Image 1 (cartoon, rainbow, N blue to C red):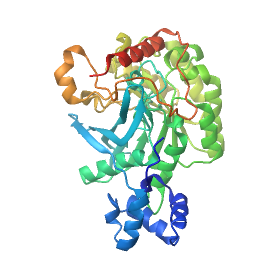
Image 2: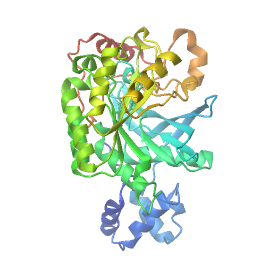
Image 3: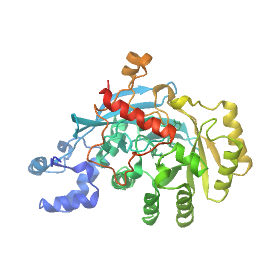
Image 4: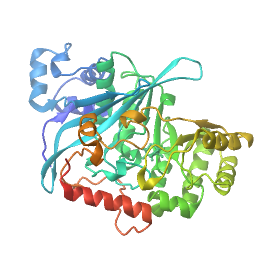
Length: 412
Ligand code: SAH
């Protein structure tokens, strides 16, 4: 891989200290650089005004501050806004180079205390190696893990563009955060750092489809961030058909890890549950879900299905209320998360780089705008990535087939 200059905005404080030491500079310079980048939003080494010109030149020779390129944004009718970003880095692929492209979504809502909550839903990967049958991101080619600065710059750029500060961050955009554990945790720790944005750890949520070993690591390391698990089905076999991650990490292992989280960290885990009529909303499913929730310290965020893959439909208002009320009647904390941003393809599970421009031009063909010309994952395999070969469960296989088919089309 190309060994270019070191990205200063990719480093946490200890890494910067090491770097400045190697340059023969004083240790406190590292903290100054860290604050410049993460507290004051430096966009270039010229913004390091407390550094002499000579030191800035010395840095420029070896170090860099790469920034994302925000290529497009689209506002939804309720104020939710979706942004598309392109990485400055080129990644070698089978048919030449391509860039990581990914999305972030700005969501405004009212918090418990009636204060406005400004949440940014950010991506951790460009594409995803998982094939959750209901999720449009899974149909995209996987291009790679996002680096720490690519995760953080989604937040910094959107704050700059909007001239307002976020109150919450959720790792629920494209990708599986726990397949990019190190970069995701480093980014979350930088966001939480008193010399950075100092965002409360309780306002940072990481969501996983169920990468069990990473959940145990998260607990072992006593990470202070909220953890959410996309449960989506209470039955082991049916969950496997819905989410291929279950083939590698069973539902019982996942629930054991969720239980351990509650016990050892004394925190309530969040389960996300997409409501998909005819798939996971029967009385039997409801009873299984109740029995799971009763044995754990948890709350359930219900999400109405947003996509139309496999001809599945969204639940009606009546079905949603019925499901939520049934859970609440059993004393379970269950909330309806709704679907902000659906009209700009910015709601959960809809992040598939479908650009507004492309949509209006090709809506009839239902084409998607893709990041690259080739679906083959690059050599940059995600930590613990699970391959998708050998699957034959129907919707999952269908999703994989869609992905393969896309790879041959050359995108738009
Ligand atoms: N890979 C991580 C984070 C990305 S998905 C995870 O699975 O948790 C973020 C959330 O969107 C998850 O809770 C997922 O279950 C939900 N989601 C995915 N596709 C959806 C869809 N089509 N409709 C509604 N929610 C969806």
